[in-house]
Amino acid sequence: MGGTIPDEVIEEIRLRSDIVEVVGSYIPLKRAGGNSWKACCPFHQEKTPSFHVRGDKQVFHCFSCGKGGDVFRFVMERENVPFPEAAHLLASRCGVVIPEPTAAGSNREQSRAAANVRDRLYQLQEEFARFFESNLKKHPDWPAARYLATRALPPEVVARFRLGAAPDAWDGCLRYGRALGFTDEEMLTGGIIRHSENGGRLYDHFRGRLTFAIWNEQGKVVGFSARSLEAHPQTAKYVNTAETPIFKKSQLLYALPFARKPMQETREAILCEGQLDTIALHRAGLEQAVAPQGTGFTADQARILRRYVDRVQLAFDADQAGQKAVRSALELLLPLEFEVGVIRIPGGKDPDELFRSGGAEAVVAAAGAARSWTVHLAESCAARYDLTNAADRGRAAGEFIELLGLVENPVLRELYARDSATLLHISEDAILGELNRRRKLRTRRYAGSGMPQNAAVSPPPSATPSAATTTDREQAELTLLELALGFERAARQLAEQLPPEWLGNSPAARALNRVLADTMNGEHAHAAAAVAAMLAEEPVPAISRLLASECTYTEKNLDKALKDCVAVLRARGAARNRKRIIEELRRTTDPEEKLRLLALLTQKSE
Image 1 (cartoon, helix red, strand yellow):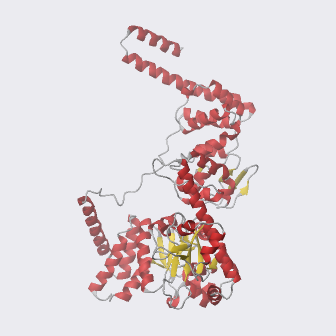
Image 2: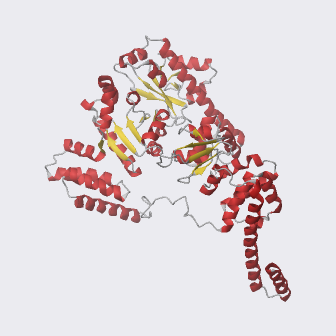
Image 3: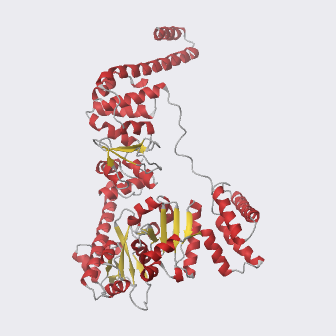
C-alpha cells in the first residue's frame, strides 16, 4: 500500500506514531477509562461524543458514522490524502526519514543517499533560519530591523513567524555555512548561495534583505523569501529560494502550519498575496490566512486547501494585478466546488496597510463584509463596461459564462447562473442557454479529438462498495475474532482446532487468521494492533468497532460462544463440501469414482 515506501519504514512510522497523541493534536480528547479516550467525531457534526480512541489497540472508531482504523487511516481521512502522503505527514512528525523513490536498477544505498541529501537540506534551512533570526536581534541598526520598526511588528510576532536579516556582504552566508560544516555544494543545492553569471565566484543569494522563513505542510523550514529594503532596488523586490528537492513553490502555502487547525475549525481559508498581508491577518485573529509562495496561486495549492476547507475568501490587492489574480484563482477554485468570496479592502489598501491604519477591528470588519464572487465580478464589470449598452452587457455576460462553465456541479451551476442573471439584468434562460451551447460545443471538440466525451467531468469511482448483508458465517467469524482478541486461550484453541477451509474470505476471516498466526508466534499481545493496521488499507467499520469496544464475553460464556460459532462454520463448511461432491459426481464418468463420491456424500449426510 505504501507504493515506493519500504515496508520496514512504514512499520517504523507506525511504531513511533502513538494514535492517542496524533489524534489529540487534531481534536481535544477526554479519557474514558483505562487506555480509552473519546471526543466528538471530527468527521461529522454531533453533540454527544461517539468517537473513541484506544491506545492499547492503536485504533479509532466512531460509533455513530462508522469511520475507523489505525493512525494512518485517521490521517488519511482527516487530511483527505492517500496513504503515501499520510505516511509522509506522520514520518515528518515522528522523525522518520522516508527514502526518495529511485529509478529502476538503483540500489538501497542510492535510495538512502537521496534521503540523506534531503535530511541535510532540512538541517541547512533550519540553521540559516536561526542565523537570520539572530542577525535581526543582534543588529537593530540593520535596515531589516529598522524596516520592521516602522511596521510596528511586536517581537513575539517577529519570533513566531521567524523573520530575520541576511548580512549585507557577498559571502556572509557562505562563510557561516562553511563554519557549520556545510559544503558549498549543499549550500548551492539549498539555494543559500549562487554562482556568478560566468560560473566562477560564489556569493550570497539573500544579501542585505529581510528574510521570511518558509515552512512545508509539516512545519519544517524548507527555504526563504527575502524582501529588498532599498528604495529603488536594482533587482526584484522579493527573491525566493530556488527549486530544491524540498522547496517546490507551487506546492507551498505561507503560514500553512499555523493556519491548518483554524482552517479545519472554520472550514474557511483566507488567501492573500504575500507574507506581510498574511501576518497582518493572523495578528487580527484571522489565523486561517495563507498565501502562495513566490508564484501565482496554483492547482496544487488549491488541492491542498481542499483537504481543509469548503470556503475560500480572496484578499488580494485592489489594483489591476490583484484583480487579475482574483480571476486566476476563481478558475482554479470553482472546479473544486469551493464557495468563493472576495474581501474588499477599504481605500484600495492591502491587509497589512489596513491593519496598521485601522487595527484588528478594521481587518475583521473587512473580512466579515466579503462578497460572493458573482457580486465581485458584477462590480468589476460595471467598472469596465457600460452596462446600459447591449454589446457591453453581452461582454460582461461572457465573463460570467466562462467561469460558470468551470462549475461541474449542476445545482451550483444553476444557482450561480441565477445570481449572474439577476446582477446583469439578463434572463436566466439566456445565461443557461449560452452556457449549455458552449458546453455542447466543448463536448463535440473532445469527441472530434478522440477523447472520451466525459473525460473532463466524470467523477472518480466510489472507493467504498455498497454494504452487503452480513451472513451467519461472517457473523460467526466476527464473533470468533472478538473472542480470539479478548482471550489468548481462545486464540490458541482456534489455531489448533479450526480447519482453515472452514473460514471464508471476509475481512473478519482474514483478520482472524492474522490473530491466530500471531498467537502461535507468541505475539498475541500485539495482535489487536496488527488487525488495526490492516484497516489502513481496507477500513471495515465492524472490525474497528470491535477493536474500540470492550470484549462482551467472559470466561463463563466463552466456551459456549466458541462452540456455537464453530458449529456455524462447520455446517457451512459441510454444505460447501456437499455441493462440491455433487458437482464432481455430475462431471465424472468413472464408475469407481462415482462409488467413492457417493460413499463420501452418504458419510457427510449422516
